[in-house]
Length: 177
Image (cartoon, rainbow, N blue to C red; front, side, top):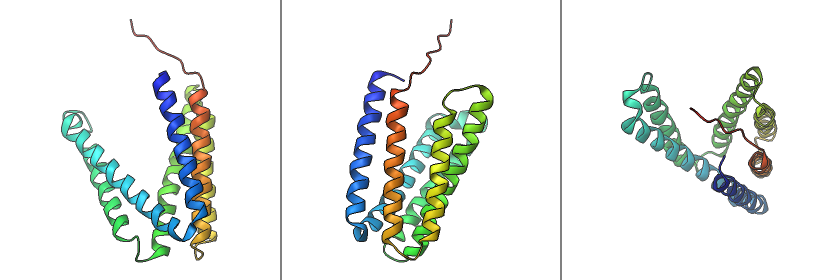
């Protein structure tokens, strides 16, 4: 990781912490902001995957998967944006499913990295377990809108701290000759 990327990661992590603290201080408005942010991020990532497919992946083996993933993420993002003020329980379940998938993928990535002998498997495992704990706590307190916002804010702070830690970790540079 380059020095500018490390600095950028630290700046993003500090902004994540600041945003999480803001959400936790105003949980009534925080829920709608969390739902809006999740929907917006999903839609933007979907657009990125679609652009990637149109510029590069359409010529690759298995490139149509990028288009499919992009369309699904974009659709989920737009769907989440339409549900912001309608049904809070549905939005909480929606956010929980996203974190469940992220947690399981983090654990699978950690197991794969450990088998390969990579040293970054501990951070992936910590992120995966953190996402699964977030899922369980949100499901336990699903009928109280303020508590999932507080739990989500704590999860964002946890993720930001892991991002800062990974920014200071040394990475090996592979030179191809």
